[in-house]
Structure formats: structure tokens, C-alpha cells
Amino acid sequence: MGARAVSQTDEEPLALPVTILTGFLGSGKTTLLRHLLTQPDMDKTAVVINEFGEVGLDHMLVEKADEDMIVMDSGCLCCTIRGDLITTLRRLIKERYNNEVPAFERLMIETTGLADPAPILHTLMTDPVLSHRYRLDGVLVCVDAVNGMTQLDNQPESVKQAAVADRILLTKTDIATPEQVAALTERLKANNPAAPILPVLNGEVSAGALFGLGLFDPEKKTADVAKWLHEEAFAEEHGHQHDHHGHGHHHHDHPHDVNRHGDGIRAFCLTYDQPIVWDRFVDWIESLIATQGERLLRIKGILNVEEAKGPVAIHGVQHVFHPPTMLEAWPDDDRRSRIVMITKDLSQEPVEQLFQSFMESDI
Image 1 (spheres, rainbow, N blue to C red):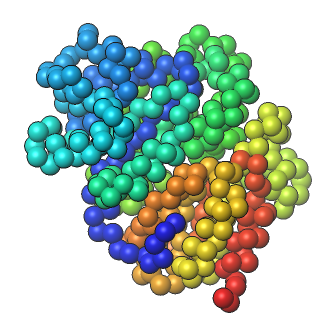
Image 2: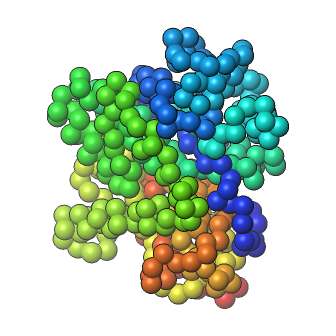
Image 3: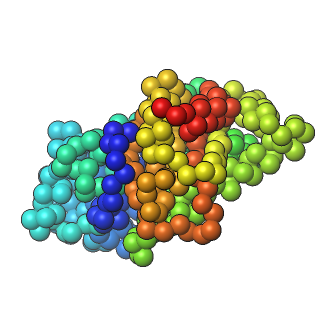
């Protein structure tokens, strides 16, 4: 978590939003990318990919090209990774500010295979040059409807990928059976109740549906907390559990459909009524990361902090945390702190108990 102080970050909404595109192997990510690159909605987007060859850009509408950077007719800028990701992203920022490339307003990073998005986020957040220039807008994952279930069964990484996503793009639904699609959809929803699942045929999806998933509404430059937190998705999940099991407090009795697959994924929301002392919150989250780091997949929250005028938004993907963001105003009259969590092999009670004990400590 790092910094103890809650600082006002005026430039935060102006940092460039970053979308990370991940996908199960063979999930049609390249076809999706090829389709996206020609769309007018991709105007002012810089896309960082490993290899042009993989996407087959030769046949596409290319305005201007050098060996590792291409400007598309759509106004989209494509760049392959030269050296490592940090070098490429620093170079892009430098050239943007020197007007050597179009002034892109958002960045999309395509990762190979089963890559974990956390190291990319870590790069963006810890690099001194990049950390002020970029913020995470969303994580997209492509899942193929035909092989998705097998991959979830056999590759623990794919389960984590789907659990941290903000949007799940379900490809090859035309060649999968309706039963395959229904079973996979049910499993993905149980693992990640807040992420909409979009069917994508032949890579066709509107770029607009993949952007603006973060805390800040890019048009208004204001925070859209309700959409970002989507806490009601987690409440529904619990409603389903309680009805199903007939008792209220055994949150670890997860819906039958998840236990059947043994993914161990939990999705829940912690709420706290009293204002929170910031240092206690930091101590709790640091303790949680130190003891359960591997089991934390995604944490989003809005906190009522004693020392802050407005709400404070917190956001982590696995062990990587964004700097906390102070928001100007509460979205409504609800002043409770709410923390939405997706975990693996970690149930709600111990997290909640640890939280309570830190919040109520007098140290």
C-alpha cells in the first residue's frame, strides 16, 4: 500500500486509462484485436502488442509505418514491444509529448497466453516515469466457449484471469453447444459476479463496450462509483447462498455450482458503518497482503475515512495496489465503507474478523 497519507490527486482523472487484454490460449484474442484495430472507436488509442505478425496487420488499413510502430487509418496507434514493456511505454509517452506520434488518450496492452495482469499493473504503478501518466481502466479476458471449461479445470491461472476481469469476452459461441455456453456462463458468473459476459462472434465487438470500465467516467472526468463498484452483484450472490442453504451467516457455504468445480473462488462485500482511521485500514490491508497475498485476486472499495473530506477509493489487483484516490463527493447518502473482494481459497469470515479487529484496535 505504501504511502500512509491520503493525498489529493488532482491529476488522477487526467492520467491515461489503460486496458489490459488477456485471454485463454486459442481464445480468439488475435481475431478480436484485428477487428478492433479498424474501428473508429479506437481513434486515439495506443495498442501495445508483442508481434505485428500475429495480428496480420499487412492486409489492414495502414496509414504510416516504421518497423515497430504503425498508425492505422482509424487513428489507432500500434506498437510492438521493443526491449521490455517499460521501455516501450516510456518511449510512447516521450514521443506523445514531443508530438512525434498522435496524442493518444488511452492505452491497450495485449498480453500473451495466460499472462497474469498483475506484473503489468505493477510496472505501470511503480515506474517513476509511468506511474503518474497511466491508470488502470479495465482488465478484459477472452474465453473460448468450446474449450473454456476444460481450461478452467486444468489451468489454475485461467481461473484467476477470469476472476480479475472487468469484462469477459466469450468467443466461439457459434460453434459451442448451447449447453457448453450455459454451463461456462454459470461458472464464470459464480467466479466473478460483477463482470458482464459479452458474446463475441468472429472477433466482432464494439470498442466502446471495452473502455470506460474504471472509476472515472472519461466524458465527465468524474467518478462513477456505483458502476465501478457494482456491489449489488455481490449482494445477489449472497442472497442466492442464503436461500440455497437456508441460514444467514455461513458465507463459506458457496453456491453449489462453484464447489462442484473446486475453483475455491469467493466474491463478497465487506461493509463498515463507522468512519475508518486511515492508518488502521493500511495496517489491515498490509497484514492481509503479507499473510494471504496469493489468495487475494481483486479488491475495490470506497471508504469513509475520518481524516478525509470525501470518500477514498481503493483498488488492488492481486498484491498490486493503486495509490488511493480521494473523490470529491459521495455518490449518494450511503456513507458506509464498502469493500468488494474476490479471493481464492479464502472465505469471508477470517477476512472480516481481521478487518474488525484492526478497525477497533486502540494502537
